[in-house]
Length: 353
Ligand SMILES: *Cc1c(COP(=O)(O)O)cnc(C)c1O
Image: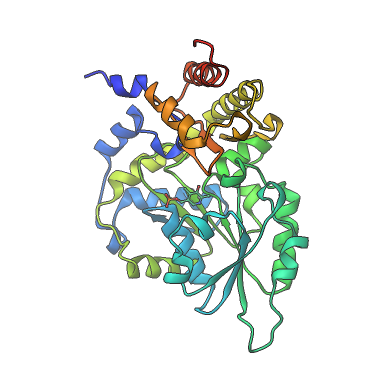
């Protein structure tokens, strides 16, 4: 049966909306499985091993969501009563239901960073003195790419400096690398190279890589051993989950090769939007697959624009009153971007599309 809905909808709400490719579905159908709580699922074991290899780490852990991966890292590196330094718009501080506090017992301590890129200069003043009546800093958390700042990328030297200085201060660094492969493609470097100074890395198989479900944690043997216990504690011990890991393996091996297309489409979208009166966006700053722009000067709210586009089968994500986020991914092609630009032009200049 032809999937007509999929063809007529341009879904730019997030890169989480991708459906498994035919290759993923085949791999899922044919996956060898076993009970992963007993460590007996060969497909999960292969995925964890490949993720560790690709990131140059001792071990990996398959987790149901990126949120759980981040939470496990926070719980593993900290004790209740500690603070976690992160950027003001970080996913862990805004979109994970305050699990950092509700479950890990920590407080986020944030700085607003230009473009979402923290520097040691911004982090250092947030480190608490070692005085018994202060909450102690337990962890530094970075997000690469920075989602809510428009998919911006950490220059490798900045990550390296933060990690080296944090380590001197006795602080581990966790990387929320939900879209680290996008960062790697934008930089033309390996994920291994751009993450090697971080103590743990979470990355999503279910975002730009296109798997239907799942994220990974990678780190040392000892870190992953603790995170595995934490995963079971949170009810995340899964059984014959090789059917999902199989799709994850295809995503991990195949999708990074084509991510550059999403970036080209995002830049093309940003450049087109920049030419529409009333829209403000720095299209030069769009280097990965996330486009965030303000429509404040049009006088139309983000939800009004979102509703109008939705009537034409184009879905986007209003962020706040006048800000809209559009995310490209492998289920959106250039024609879909052209359609989006035509609809935006028609809506904002009142000329027929
Ligand atoms: C999506 C995302 C996550 C994790 O999301 P899940 O929906 O829980 O998989 C974490 N960090 C960032 C930056 C994200 O964009």
